[in-house]
Image 1: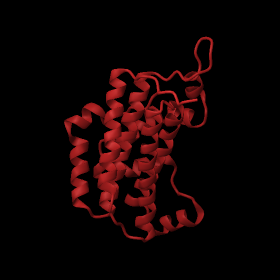
Image 2: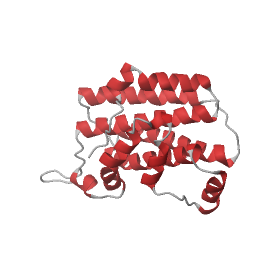
Image 3: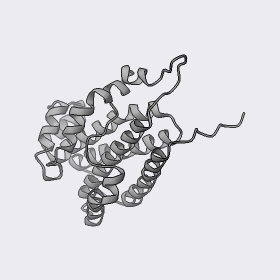
Image 4: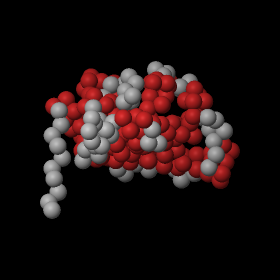
Length: 220
């Protein structure tokens, strides 16, 4: 049987999805060719930032295919890879990085890592902490098959996806922000003033604020 076309999207969802698809391309063009050092203090956070970007691509592709449950489940993984990468890059000692490599262990809890990260100038607006406070329960529910997922997979008389357009928009916005923050740090690891400047401009631009915002926006 031929594959069915995905169901149409509401106009506002379609517009945000189109912006998200364009952002995937924009990020890939700027990440391509960047080089970073191969020591663990640079490479390990770099790998986590790259994973964050891959999750962003996955989320956008899943939403494009209307596989929203899996897209929502990836938000926590994307957020965690970003925050772990940030802490290892901005705050961890060489011994702490090495211990993570050897034992897959970090000395701080997730919230403690956020507290330390947001002492840095890039994160003084506490935007990541807002996501943790306002969206962590939802992220867990979507990732681990909790009630956030269950409630969005039932209708009155059937079991089928029932994700609200506003929630899809929020997921795309959150994922886009996490991806840009990851690219910014990759630019710093690669000492690319061009990428840093372009990402900073994108984050502060009116178009980005209109389409992706910097306020907490995890579907709850």
